[in-house]
Length: 336
Image (tube, rainbow, N blue to C red):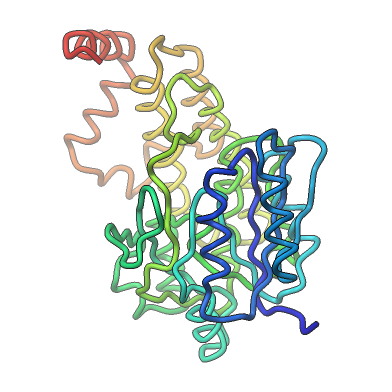
C-alpha cells in the first residue's frame, strides 16, 4: 500500500461518545492521502472497541492500545514514532476536521514548498457543522499575506494551538520536540518551538479544524490543580527555544508571550477558577515567571499594556484574598 502523505495523530481517552464525529471527519476527507493513528490511552469505556471497528473497516486507520494511561503527551509521542507520512496533523478525540483540511494543507504545502501550513478553526457543539458557525483566527486574516520572519513574529504575538497546522514531521522529530509526558498543557511546551522552527511557514484563511466547546476539559474546569501544570510548560518551552537558537532572536516577543500566558492568565486563574484561593500557588506562579523572565516588568510590550490592564493585574497580585472574597460573595448573591 502506498505510504500516506499525512499522518493524523489522535490520542483517545474515554471519548467513545465523540468518536463517530472525530473519526468520521477524517473518513470524510476529500483527499485520500492520509492515515489516522489512534492512541487508545487505557480507556475504560467503549473507545477501544469502536476504534478497532473503524480500523477493521478502513486500513488507513491504525490503533495503538496502551495498558497504562500516559496522557496526551505520551500518546502523541508514541504515535509519532509510528507515522509514515512526511506531514503530521493533530486531532483531539472530541474535535473534528473540515472535509477539505488534508487536501487544502497538502495543496498549499506542495505549491509553496512549505514545511508548515497554519489555518483557522471554528467552535462547535453537538454534531460537526457543514458550515463553520463561529470561526476563530488567532493570527488574523492578514497573516495569510505574510511570510518568513513577518509571519513568525505574528505567531509569537498571537500564539496558535498545536492542532491548528499541518507540520513536516521532521520539524518535530528532527528538532527533538516531543511532548512532555504525564502532564497537562503539554502542547504549550512545544507548539511555539515547532512553529518557529519552520523554514517556510504559510498561513491559509480557511477554518479547517473544529474545536468542541460542549465538553469539560482541564483548560476550562474549575478547582482543578492540574491547571498549574502550565507553569512547567513555560520552563520547558523556554528551554527548547534557547536550545534551538530561537529565544535570543525573538526574546522580546517570546518574553511577552510567556508573561501573558503564564503570569497574567494564571494569576487570574488562581483567583477565579478556585473556590478556595490557592495562595501558595499564586506565589509559585510569580516566582516561576520571575525565574523564566528575569526583570519581566521591564519587557517593552508588557510595559505598553493599557494602563487599566496594568492596574488590574497589579491589584490582583497585591490583594488576591480581598478580590477572591468579593468574587465569592458576588457568586453567592447571584446564586452560582
